[in-house]
Length: 288
Picture 1: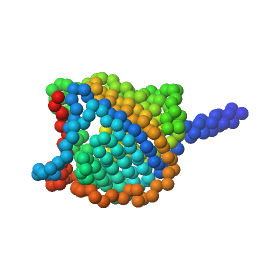
Picture 2 (picture 1 turned 90 degrees about the vertical axis):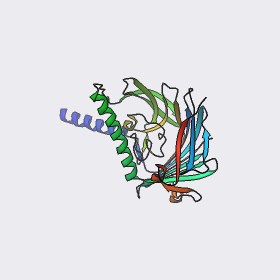
Picture 3 (picture 1 turned 180 degrees about the horizontal axis):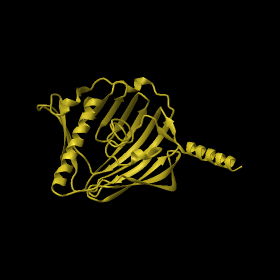
Picture 4 (picture 1 turned 120 degrees about the vertical axis):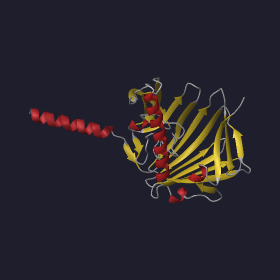
């Protein structure tokens, strides 16, 4: 009798764990709105110009900006369309050919660049190397710090977003300055995107190129079992970013033509933007 009860309890636990797992979705269309507030002590100016001089486009960023985005997910592709007062951007990630294309339309100028996964991995490796060099230099000076793993604190609070009942999780992470940052995230526990990678710095998905977290990322977000629907990240200098999902279509029917590169853009390899021929982009602080 005891063995029967133990077996039954084990089956119940297994079923409970199975039910708790979010459904994995292959195809989806997500519409979202992102509001950004820039530091009060200075705005930003973005200039885009052909390499070697010539006419370029330049504009000062306001104190804040609102962007609406539509993201198309399939196992082989991901496309993000973003519209704001600053301009329109499109990012297309081709997983089959391991490359991505970023298109920008700023002040009537249409331009873009392509990059391969290998190039992006090399750039990430270079950034990691620079961070490690800085860390080694500080340690040589006797300055040490410990990078703790982020802590996820789940809550029973719920909130309805885009028609879905979402749950709240707070991510606590410690920065290199020792300060504890807390980020509240509302997520849908019912599903997650199969091709979506929420790991900060990943090549594609929520935490990387074209994803809704391409501006900033929070360590630990990749650990959430579900799909992030709303979050707000703020920094001491006054910078703040708030993202809210407006609509989600799961198991959506998406034609491959959606991911075709449109005509009319001056598209260069990413290396051209890094100092070679083509066009360049720079971000400058505005003077007040």
